[in-house]
Image (cartoon, rainbow, N blue to C red; front, side, top):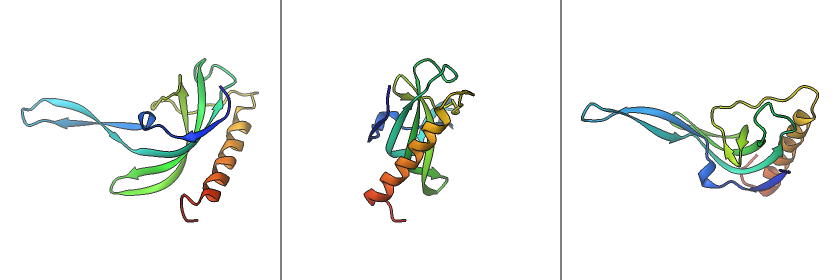
Amino acid sequence: MGKKDEYYPESTVAVRPKVAVLTDGTIETIVMKTFFPIRHIDVASSGSVNGSSACYRVAFGIEHRGDKHAYVYKILVCNDGKVSGRLNPAFLHGSDDFARVSQAMSDLSDQVRASGLVAS
């Protein structure tokens, strides 16, 4: 899996589960989207610290925080092309993963600025 830059598919949006009590008294888990990615770059993971098919997804998008929102950059872990919402990125000591993810973050920031997606 190499470096990839494309618009982010709707199906891989990071989500946060919430619990709702229904009118009949039952409890149901519902999922609320909190991060809506606009662009991303995938960076292959060189080790097995995040899983053998893992990659780092450096993403730019809108994150909802309560009743407000903000444009943010995030580093997500993906397995088999899907965001693993509960995994935090970890960088294997001695690998160049951190340097490659840092470069991807810089590249993505440059792309967002050049595209005019948001006002600086």
